[in-house]
Length: 406
Image (cartoon, rainbow, N blue to C red; front, side):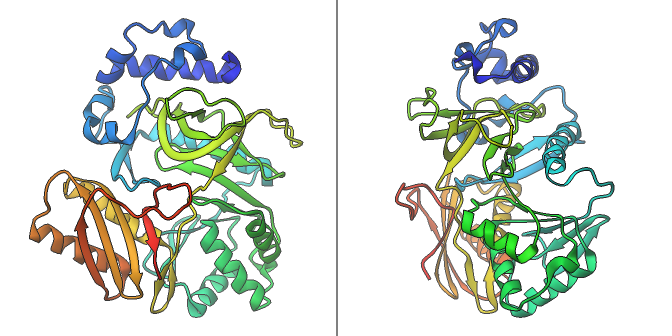
């Protein structure tokens, strides 16, 4: 069991535990009797599991007392659970996490100075925007023939090295390219990177056919960024330099290899708010099988991972991530909403289901409706319901924060 950690991971785990014990109120108490220097996996399993609920209700217990919070950056997320909260991250943490991602990309395409990225971005209101040097933002709102033509034209003109997005949006673009017999060699894209949703083998083949370049799959979180990255054989390998991954059963015990359970991570680069044995809300299993690619890290297999419905709009389709900015709005305006779900009942009809700590005032409901309309981008009926009962669509009863009944 102690071979769960690589030697490097064990040292990294000791480092983040020592830091958390010294600089956070929660881990000062939780690790009081833990001999970190002699740590093994059996000891590690005694550390309390960290949930989103704990972070939401007791955030000050987990933030580092040694970090200058005027200089940190925040990641706003609700993940697959619909529970809005923010994660502070230092510039150093983000840099170190970025380096682990860069290493994975370099395995696929080699070293290229001045890489250019094109990414489908929920916050982009224009079809395409050159946000900063080396970055092209592409909208996920109102995807139709006209916007697809503009996206393809810009990709050919901009010639990004990487194209990033969710599998649903990338597949939608690939189908458009193949239907219209567009030669994407002109774009000189070196790699496609799927993020935020699962990637089926059929989708991967479609993307490779349309873009004529390798397709990589990344499983990650806003809280930690990269967790696992695919190899040439399409296996998701744990990114050992960034995280330690456990699969736990319903009792919080190690489920065993090749057994389905709840994915928990320990992020080695999370000093502003240490994420130790953090419950991601996702389901999967770890495999020790040897991969033909030669990467010795464990393989992560995901179950029912983030297969999101698309929003049907009068102009076409939008990826539901455009509505994730509700999450930021909830936090910044202190609505006390601890979980939410959006249900599309019809083309112009939506229900926003909110579980809040206290009853929402009429003015707050009106603000929510206005913000929803703003993010949606077209006029629709929005019903706000306060409840702690949510629509479960999958056979596994896994929560989905966006559901389409269209």
